[in-house]
Image 1 (cartoon, rainbow, N blue to C red):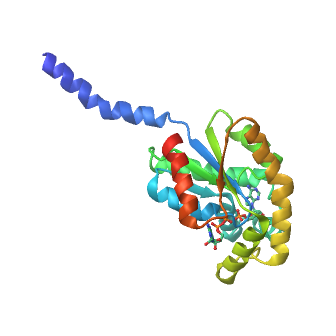
Image 2 (cartoon, rainbow, N blue to C red):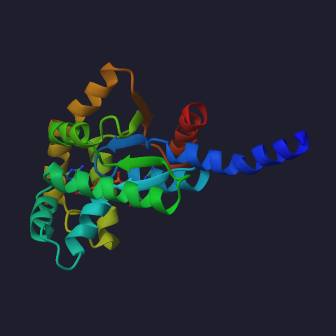
Length: 219
Ligand code: ADP
Ligand code: AMP
């Protein structure tokens, strides 16, 4: 009798766990830094060692630009070339959809690295409007790297990336956008103790050793 009761309870454990996991809110780490600071490189390494899904705002926008029938394709194209920040309605919808699809496919995938977002006040307002209460922002991983190093890395990447914005003219504009619009957002998160700063001017493995230490400590 008692044995049967235990058996029934244990049979239900997986389904209870399943339901708890369904209730998990997305756990988000925002990844910020200048163009070429190494955000994408480090996110790829994080994904190999930790249970995170990498969503790059820039990659999602480039995919939307290339999608046949996209209403925003031309607009995105112009903004990217000019190094300007695409209107938040477009970016936030792409991010939300990607998060939902990831969690629908596998309910255990609720940890996200959101790379290249929020890049300005408009992005932050859009996030609050659409996602506040629906996702927890754990902290901001900030890849701190001098402008000249960033530019040199992107020019090097431009030799093979085929990106319309990895050229000196676009890069000067992207650096200005970063300094004027993104740095104040990082400063804002800094005020609430939410920024984990990594010296990103060093080699990939040294940078990753610091990233790993942060994630080992804070998940
Ligand atoms: P972001 O995503 O911040 O724009 P990427 O990760 O694409 O930057 O890196 C930009 C370029 O710099 C890439 O060509 C990459 O291989 C290179 N790179 C990334 N991290 C480092 C590093 N720590 N040292 C030297 N080169 C790097
Ligand atoms: P990235 O791939 O992060 O270097 O971004 C390339 C370009 O995509 C940027 O210069 C912007 O034009 C656009 N972009 C990337 N992230 C965002 C964002 N969060 N909001 C708006 N535009 C963005």
